[in-house]
Image (tube, rainbow, N blue to C red; front, top):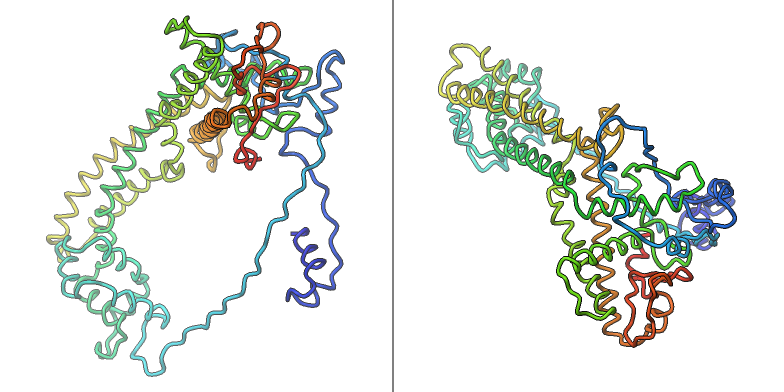
Length: 523
């Protein structure tokens, strides 16, 4: 806000903000920080411990999981050492430490909002008798006029327990009087014909059915119960399947392994180095860590390495030995990308579970049980003369509801225990000391966000391939210079075919040609 005020006072002296604002001296801008970048002064102190023979690398901040920090099986025990390999020189070339000038910060645009003054509605001076607050009475009258039914039909439904649509029940519940208001209306001994519209309706309903609005709430509960309990059962099934998906081995574990290796390399010589694993919240930071030249990110580098590794594995399976070196590289990429793009489908229930509102998921069952108990209690306390068809209708529903809720509560406890075990499998200590406000389904949200990031990278890689194919030799010189194989691999760059830019980064320069503008906008 300080930057906005300064711009307005300096650049727009006649913009209508007032003389007091224009005469105020500009506020000194705050010192910019780089906490979201993942490096700063502390990084330089840590990097001083690295030997001068090694390139200083940008740090990857994570909550380290040590070798002896757990007493149960965790996901990091499943990683196979050596299944993912990449040259140290690639990371050094991409993420070597080099101070960059602070990027210009964008000043948010703030549009002046005009204040809307609303006049206070006043009751008409010739209005009939009001028992309720006049404003509340008028609002209730508006609701009553919107009901697509008659007063007699409402009375009949309240006596029989059925015959009114849920939307009408919701409107009736909105105009439900308080206990004190209902008492004053019921005790009115004047001429009912002189009552205001809302009071007249409430007087007629409460005289005929004293428990009218309790019945409205009970019928509304019954009308919404089936959909709520069905949605809860579906959510429980989704979360259970999501836990099963997270327990399966596959590309997700390979991505974690590649990230762990890259992070340990970048954090070498610091307290964050030599990690057994890391807290998965660090996955969200991968796209924030740019290479030294700003052309790629740590996330893209990791995805490309795993894509190449997976492509090689599949080519080996299919025993495709009749291709040239360039054709094999293209085949690696094609097969690996296809598998990586299917990762979201393999974790479909994880993504669905991430969309579940945690608080609602946890409280729905207990809230339904509480409403069932309260409804049954009031129903039991009703006077004998008030009992009839409505009571018989509701009693049968409440008995079935009680039995079903008991079963669903047991199922929810089982699924939440499975969630807790899955969370502690991925996050050391993740299932302990969780406050009431924390997200029990946070693991699914983290994984879903990461998979979405991977999908965007895969899409960008595919677009880059298409641009390169359609663009002919526009960038061929740069690609050959920056995307050659490391010397140990015996890279042959004399061929007329282009080397794909999305893997085999040169240790000397790992610039990625044609980095998408869409990806840069995320930083």
